[in-house]
Structures are given as C-alpha cells and as structure tokens.
Image (cartoon, rainbow, N blue to C red; front, side, top):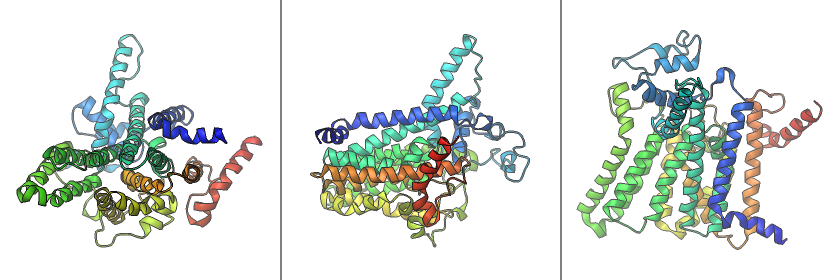
Length: 456
C-alpha cells in the first residue's frame, strides 16, 4: 500500500521531469519507427506536413518561395503529370504555385533543420558524402523531432498554467489525462510533423502568459498577449481567435484605464499580433499578391451551416466520441468559472468560437485524422478545465489516478487499433467508426495481434 502511494506521488513530486521523460520516450519511439517502419522512397513528411516542409526547404536551400522543385522531388516520378498533382506546375500571375498551409511550423522547425544542415556540411567536409540537399531523411526527420519537442513543451506550459490556479496534484494529473488521453497524443508522437504540435506549444504559451499576468492591466501585458496570439495564428490560422481575449480584457479594464486606455491597449495587442503574424502576410503577398487571404477559397468555410453537433459526437472523428476524456475537461469549465472568473470567461470565450470555426470547415471531420484533430489547439483550455474539476477531488488521489489511467488506456487502445488499420492489417483491426469499430474493437485488437504473434 505504501509503495502504491509513492508511485501515485511521483508525478506530483517532479512534474517537469515526468513530462520531459514522456517527451524523450516519444522521441525514442519516433526514431525507432523511422528505422523499423520506413516508408517507400524514404519519405518521412506526408499529407499536410509536406506543405509545411516545402516552405522550409525552399527558404533555406533555394532562398525563395517557389515550391515546384520541392514538390516534384518529394512526390516522385510522375508528379505534375496527372490531374491530382497538375497544380504543382501551374504558376499564377505572381509566378508562384499555391501552398495551402501556414508558414509557422516551418519557422518552428528551422532551428533543428539548420543544425542538421550544419552537421551534414561538416561531416561532408570530412568525406561523409551525405546529401546536403534538404531532402534526405535526416532533414525530414528534424521536422518530426521538432514537433515532438514542441508538443512536450506545450504540455509543460499547460501544466504550469493550471498549477497557477490549482494544486500541483490536480494540475499534473489533468495535464497527463488530457495529453495522453486525447488526440494530442497522436500528434505528439505519431504525426508530430502536422501543425497541431506547433499549435499546442504556441497556444499553451499564450495561456501560461495570460494566467500568470491576469492581475495586470499595463500596456506591456497586452503587447505580450497580442504577440503570442500572433505566433499562435502563424501555426494555425484559426488560433487568431485568441486575440478576442486581450480585446475583452481591455474592454473590461475601462473603469480603471478609461476609454483612451482601452484604445491604447487594444491597439498595442493588435499591432503586436500583426507584427508576429508578418511572416505569413509576407508569404501570402508573394504567393497570392495579398497579405490576408483564405488560400483554400471562400467555399472552404460554411459559416451559415456549421456541423455543431456532428463535430462533437459523430463517429466520424467527433471530439467526444473519439476522446471522451474531453467531456470531463469541458465540464470542468463550470468549476473553473467559480475558481477564477476571469480565466473561466476567457477559456469559454476561446473554446466556443473554436467549436464554431471547426464545425464550419467544409470537411469538419478533419480528413484522415485521429479524432477531432482541429481541437488540439484547445489543449491548454481543456487542461485548465480538467484541472479545475480534479481540484475538487484533490484529497482523493487514487480517484484522480484511476480516472486519468482509464482514459489514457482507452485512448492508447484506440490508437493501437487505428495504427494497426492504417498499416494495412485491416482484417485484424476495423476502422474506428460505428459502435463496434469505435468502442468495442479496441479491446479485441490487442488479443488478435498477440495470437497472431504467438502463432507465427
């Protein structure tokens, strides 16, 4: 019994080391997957990640934003010659081709990418002969490792924000439950080259700053919050919703700072956000001849007919149906409002429009996603809500641990099923939809895999 108590207390004694340890575990698992599960042609970046990566490679090696050569190289033989990839060779009036993804992740990956470039350059000077081209696997892998580190740091920032409001016990178990029990796990360890890991970091940094400075009304605070909101929007454009929070704070401060003070604070926040978002505006200006746009076109958003219910409960990647731990996190907004009205109102003011925006996207299910991936940017708000709920049970540590581990285990089993299906073993693992596919199969798949392995 004493040993169990000590085990339960480990996360509370060293939350930073625990989060760092989990992040290191993800790094090792990702590195192993690059060796054991190598994709045909040596590719590492796929899907949306490819569009972020070509921006990074083009800026560093070609010093431009013309991505045709990157796409042709990464897509391989036949690219640009069929209807699906014909856009690769179609330039517009600016002489560029389209890129539908934000530039923020490319900028976030740049430091490690440049380190790899430097190491390869030095190694080649001593005769290593490794391709210094920005395409080789070491370069692509740097994006994945950067994403994992970003997700781990985002989890740490979310914990720190929660720990500023509740006990360390409630904060750490809430952080672990939401991180490892939701779609954030997949985009922290399996697909860290998507923009969601970058969004976790940027949005969590905003919420940490917001919570830590919530007692201040000085102009510097609004500059900080505006800049962090701009950085978050660089990672995923929808995260510009964060700007509503300093705007609301400025309006609420009117009795103390006056109308002129409201205008100054709001203007400073907006200017700081615009400055932080400037790299994206520059890219858009170059590609589309306009500093602000929706590259996917106006039809990408259905503002008048959002799938508000489906995006939450549909078996087609619904937020709650795939990751039910977030039901508790959202329910925790009520005790969060009672604990700290300012933080609770701000959390709701971010979560509600995020829900509407995600439900308004034409493919509200997020394509081939693990759960409601577009809600990963709400990660720190979910942690705050869960922490406020867990604080009510702070004197019942076994209950907190049990709840956390149950949801983490359920998510881990679903992830195993999903990955088994995605790797072609579809006779073993059905896709997670329908009642059995989403709720029952996850318990059968491990047994089937174990039996196959034993009978080999």
